[in-house]
Image (cartoon, rainbow, N blue to C red; front, side, top):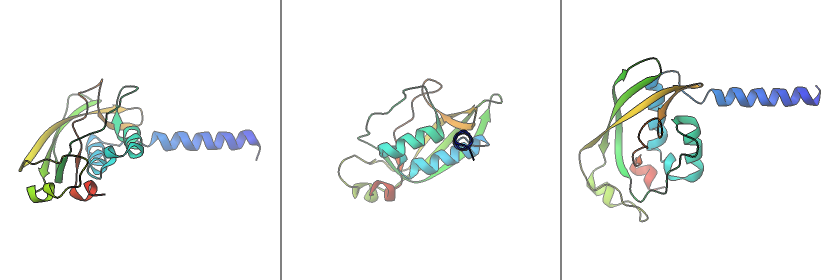
Length: 155
């Protein structure tokens, strides 16, 4: 194999791998986003970059400053989705807050929620060239503060 053939093979492999970052459906995109979100992907700078590249449709240079607060949650439930056309959908997610005693036992360095009950949050999803993604600025509001499981928070 010649050098240019190897280079072409590597370039195509990389391009195809990147093209598969989005999800096939809005619901799959929301579920993939939540799996990463609850595992703490937005709390670590290296994981944040991968999370942004794989799950979020945002403007160039979109960034989040460090978070001093998170919501500790035990579950996230995606409700019905509404699509206004073939490229834009919305979803409401219900986050079940962790019990107060779990929140109080969180490590120092951030303030977990002291609330009980649940939080409902609306998300916008958009179809990108590689599939569906959760939208952030400038396509939608910036992402809400991180929601993570107690286990992810204690890492």
